[in-house]
Every structure is written in structure tokens, then in C-alpha cells.
Length: 196
View 1 (cartoon, rainbow, N blue to C red):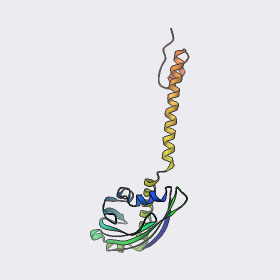
View 2: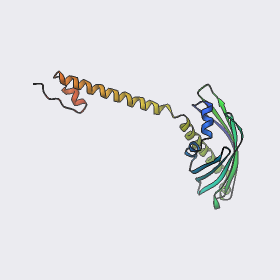
View 3: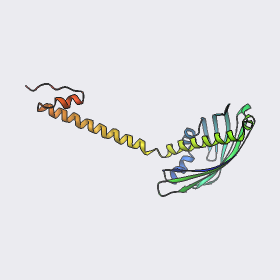
């Protein structure tokens, strides 16, 4: 199975490179990853639970990083065994290309082989599953490295709403001092006593 694709990430190349070498970020981005241990800068060990068509299995294996060229990219090679489900082994060349000062294009070329029950599922199912998993990984990875602006917008709207609520409460309090704030106070859940 071979696959080539790329994804734009809204973050500087150095930040993307750091994330590609951060086991916590990788663990949270890899679909089904239950464990990811970094033994050294070039060796990791992973346990991943996957469902490929009717076959469910937990794969354990080692991952090696080669041809490190920070912050431009590296080659990743790995092999995982899933018991009776079979095995998967292969590698990927990952390249990072600057796209302006605050964005990076992540290119990847994957070449992988599967054996055992997995191989019997047929290349179309394997290819479509691999593409789906790669898509899920890079979407989650991109979100970890550069959270979408929607989250920032929600925070800004909440801050604005809080500020407006505070202004409304102040208006109600001020209105209550002058005897005309009953409606404003009710708008924020309060009542005002008539002035004597």
C-alpha cells in the first residue's frame, strides 16, 4: 500500500517539528493509541487498538525515526504485530515546508505492507482504512498544534457576554438608585424596592 498526501497546519515549521517529536501529542493524535513510550530521540514503542473491517486487534510494535533533518523532516519506520489479526510494517517520509511565517505544509509518503488476516481483507478495504486513519491522525495532530480559531472566537464571545452582563447589572443597580431600574433589574434576575 502506498499513499501520498499533504496537509496545511496553521503553525510555524519549528512548532510543527517539535510536535512531531512530542510523544504526548502523537499519542493523543494517533487513532486508537493506548500507549506511546519514547525510549530515546529515535526510538518509540506503541500499543494501538484498531478495527479494520471485521478484524479488531491490539497492535504492539516499535517505531524508529531515521534521517532526522530538523526542522525539515524525517523518515519513520515501524512494525506492529496484532496476534492472529496479522501484522503491519512500513515507513513514511515526512517533510515540512514553510508556507509563510505562521503556516507549514506537512507532506507525507507512506509505503506499508500487511499480513495475516489483515491481508485477506483486500487491498481496497486496507487502503480506504489507511486513508481514513491518516486523515483522523493529521486532523487531530493539526488541532493539537494549532487549535482552530473557532475556539478563540468562542472565548472572545464569552468574554464579551460577561462584560455585557456586568454592564447590564451596573445599569440595573444605578437605575435602582434613581427609582427607575425595575425593568433593568428584572432583566438580570433581580428586583428593586420602591424608593421611600
